[in-house]
Image 1: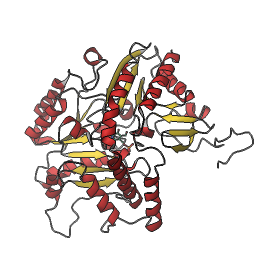
Image 2 (image 1 turned 60 degrees about the vertical axis):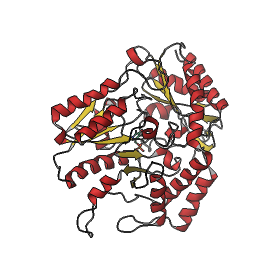
Image 3 (image 1 turned 135 degrees about the horizontal axis):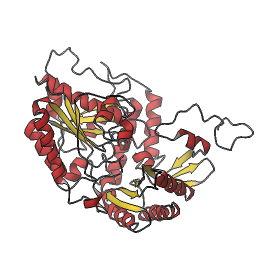
Image 4 (image 1 turned 30 degrees about the horizontal axis):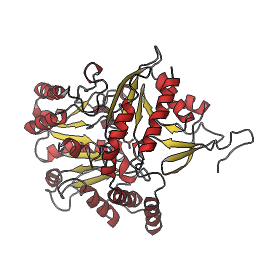
Length: 446
Ligand code: PLP
């Protein structure tokens, strides 16, 4: 299966150098590679033949389990029937059907979907739509974008500009002009070890009023937030916080974008965070779960008024000068169809809700283990924040992660926080196993 030489470790390619790995400590990885070579249902197989329980649904995406036959077969059928067709001035049925099925996941049936290939592209697309929307309505001065500290919105220039994780920003120059940030809501003095939504922190949404007063509403196009901050390790919105953001945006004619790349399609036990928190944004970005990770796909769902604002000029004119060669790719659209069917047939949203208490109870049982600074959870997402080893930030979480792998368990770590995102097909017993393996790994990582 791999090109190997006589001295190579079985299953490990003999050239690890050519692939510059994303968001990876390349030298550390390549000195001790961790390779996955097969996957089925809840498990990966590692290159040395071990079974690894998938505690992060791949990268928050494989929720119907690995190698799900109906999804794999839908993609196989589609690639055999028609591998590719353009979506510029042409169309193919499967993309239209997938868009209709996606829009139906939200209440109301008139939403519109713009397809991209990733969450990063979805975010940059939403930001561009926001600015262009105001322009086509005659409010061309509305160009400012407001993000949030600790926010993760992918890696495009738009996404890192509104994003709030300094490591993702500091290497890349001055980024987009005209961007401001809300404060984040993570405060251990008030919110440590909260189960679900913290009671403290809704007032931090009022900072948006301060930003509006500073720049004037007439210059602001949109506010973008993740309903639950995922990549900066499961920061759950305080009770009432998102409602306040909605209210302030509405009052000032500012579009509210929910980046639901992680929270979309069931992670919070509802179709979207919008439903879980009872707040309706003007646009939603999605990716990840929509194809169960099988084929890359992302997109933006926009409310009817936004789409309609563009449908005004001459009918032969292109309304939005934006799109990707692979927008609505037939295989991605086929995978989305099959994934949405699987979600519906299996009642995945309900299942995620049913499993939530097991994850909550399990993860909070880690309180008191040495070095645990905070634990937070909502839906099927949880994080354990560890105290950093002095002068070596990130090392403790790396040790937990590596020990977890030895124990046959895949977690996700960022900084010194470990995240768990069980696939929706997990059993209660598997969630308990994840927690116990995490306990072993935390105890070992002193
Ligand atoms: N937005 C959010 C909220 C995300 O969590 C992510 C990825 O984790 C992205 C955007 C970027 O998605 P992608 O990696 O598909 O570009």
